Image (cartoon, rainbow, N blue to C red; front, top):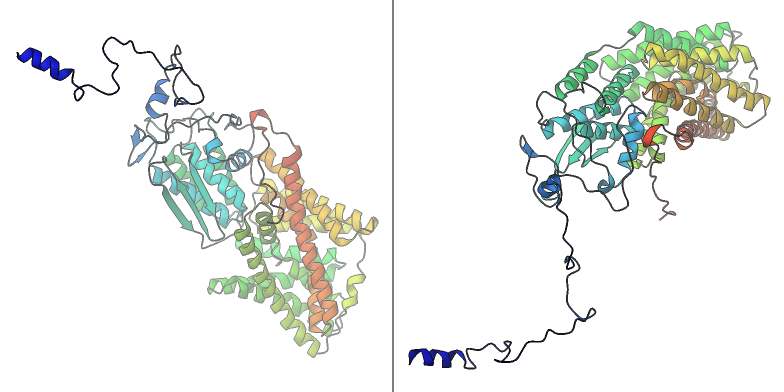
Length: 556
């Protein structure tokens, strides 16, 4: 009885599913409708067996999965994906300078960057802690930014250091007074960020070259014995402790010779040379005294601009047979901030607008300091009856051979003031001589305008400087900054200030406008020459990929 009751209850409507076929009826599968059926696009078709992924992809193939291997307190990054369109072949070798390699990498999207090659940089196989790598990158970026390097190359150096130790998802950022960097281990973990403030700046291109050599050694993955993190810190400490290659008295003498050579360029003779050199050396010593007392650079420029102007005014009052304008112009050449101007315009042309605005604002403050110092002396000179003639700018004597040697001497002394390596002084001296030859041929012989002639000469300076830096695998600044010295607008600046001192505002404004145009032509010409070398020179090896530039915004 129990069995029959259970069978009867199992066959009742309550116990039977509404989707179950009745007894004796064979279920017929529904027709397959490809349009209306709900299937998954990710389902594997029948008859196909998916291949087994390699062990590295099975363990750490997803960016959303926490990596299994860790070092210290931060995990290692997961394996990088390969985009559908492929990735550019970038070899981290010595075939090309590291600036070109890292610049290409930085202009790629993060998802398209190739994963860094694994290089064992120590006795064990574990990678160094992430905070120490970021700190090393920040210290190197701080030295480069303080030395006047462009923001793009500073970011490239920081990126190269991080990739050398296996950190590929890093984003460096450079402003005028701060360098920062952020590293994201994976998409599911918080990023690690660090920053350093740049408080002191200096012009020591020897230190700059040493930092470039360190970054070059770190970014080379083909070395038999790569640089470990401890060795990198040790070399960085030695770079910081190294003294300047030239003593203080050599810098003072170089400032005087620079001013004397500049006075010869604008038509001065031996007496003018000596007067300009004496004024520049006296101004340099006064500026050093102000710096020792802790005065800002603005007041140092004000004080340094006064002695050359005072000597020129005194010679005019004494009715000496010298050109006072050449004496004052020579003193201004030693003070014009050409290095900061070129760096500011370069940052603006490469898209670092905040840093460019800050650098140009610094140039404006220095220029205002020079104007203030010279105007004070010129005002008192005019009140004392000094007969300063603005028309003397039109009576420049053409002495090609003397001016070529004067331009080379100016570039030589400028290189010493920038604390360059002795091996680069001769090359930059020749580059400065070529710049003046081109300018003289276009302006004096060809009758071209001073602005156009200056732009072409500065473009050749930038081109030759970039070629020399590629040959030496170093920074281009030591080969270009001192070479533009003969092209600086010293005479236009002086005659503009003289016009204001004599209450001739129209003449003064016209001269200062020409000085500003010449300065911009120098900066743009140097940057354009560097970009032309990157545009047309094919790089050796697989790293000859064209770097990606920013898209045109059409002004929006």
